[in-house]
Image 1: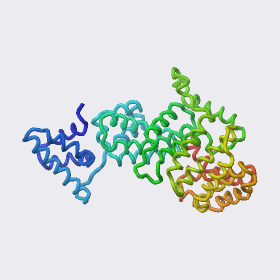
Image 2 (image 1 turned 60 degrees about the vertical axis):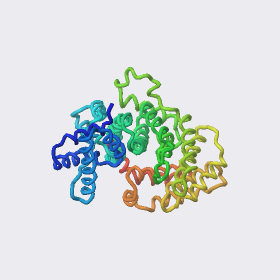
Image 3 (image 1 turned 45 degrees about the vertical axis):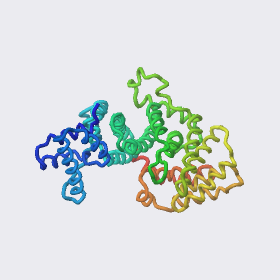
Image 4 (image 1 turned 90 degrees about the horizontal axis):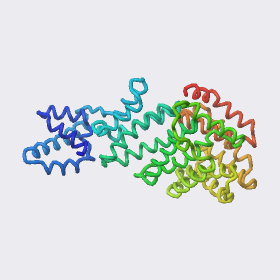
Length: 411
């Protein structure tokens, strides 16, 4: 099958004048992408004389048109078929399945450029804070486009996939923490594992590897305490059938099942160890915090844990994370140290860190962070002190009560 970019360039070759060619280029800006220059040059070199001459002229024209656009002489509106189709699904005009079929057509996905992918991902991460359902829908359409694109197009493919998978891991984590859908979970893990070692000089480094750890931890534990955990896990598992009902008829049970908490937590620790070994500074501190938290929950689930090693990791994380920027993390890490070794930290360490969270107004946290991150800060601090200072934990929960209700109503 011919490369979809070449097929699109042939349509450019069919234009009659320079003005028509420029108009076509502005309508299809992917034709000006430098990622396809080598492909285009090799293809043009194989054309017969007159066709080759025209192709060379158009290659030069696309370069000058791109330069003019960067100077503001032309306006370019990047097409984003994923957002357009997702909007139609949201309105009920088309089904998600139809959107996925449409975006998988070569003439559609070839128009996608990296900025379009990042726009979809930012939109999905914003949406998932209030409702994960449209975020899942949007990302499934994007992934259908990238899967089809990857079968025919290699140019900039890995970077696009990595950006999408990083977001997909976060969206699936949010979705599965509400509705435990093993189909989504395994899809995210498979995609994440395939790109876990991809970095491309990201900041912080290896974000997919870190989010794989978070997926295996936060999906089960975010906002939770060990108290009556078994009952809450049973209630959580019923959410799948409440959400999908008869739509699950005929789906093999093994496809729906999530890993057990006892299976997921050691995997979370493995991911966090791998990414911590590749990070430095605050980024390493964040991954170490995830690692220690996964060890804490393993201990609470009666899985074997090296307690002194966990304490050492927690203390290193405390050293790497400035308390003024990470008060909730300090509260939690000090609580972990206390849990693993009662002589290693006094309850006042975790309590002081939790009090620091309360001393900063909620509005300030919302300005600094997004809603989801702010909720996590308060929940984390409350969880850390619930045993030593239940009154302080209650004050933390009450501070975000209205915010939690707002999020629940939006969902």
